[in-house]
Image (cartoon, rainbow, N blue to C red; front, side, top):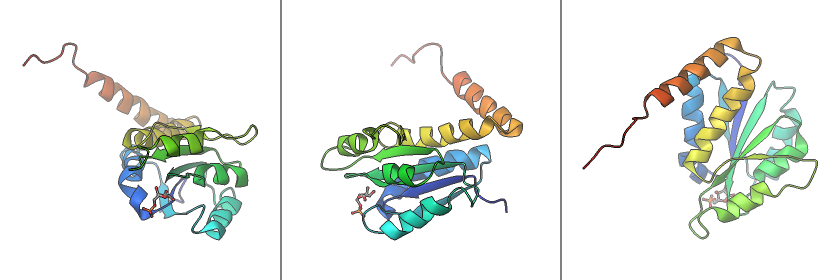
Length: 162
Ligand code: RP5
């Protein structure tokens, strides 16, 4: 099996129903990935090791999802130059606005590409990762172009009437 080019990390098992959207679209596009639970607060040493070894393990994009005080994407961006795409997981208390602001407001010098809150953000994170990899991978670029064309073709010209 090829080594993963994308790392999908999340703060908790409870984030998986959101982050599976990223995994599913990467499966559909034939992109190798790994999925790991890495928590900024609960497993900081695991976060440190993951970031420290990301480049040497061949990861080219990291998708990081977390909710609430969502420090995982930003902390990962501080530890590796591998581009980090952040997914704000929807929370019960504040609907994910807490996650969004936690991920979005990075200090200058350590960017995180922040997606929309929840499942749409996770799916777009997968598509964004594929788009980055497609810059150097013509076969993947063709698959992504086809996926986009299929989506466009599936949109009706007119709304269905009741
Ligand atoms: C964050 O706390 C996780 O990313 C998750 O979204 C949130 C809640 O975690 P659990 O209490 O469900 O494990 O660290």
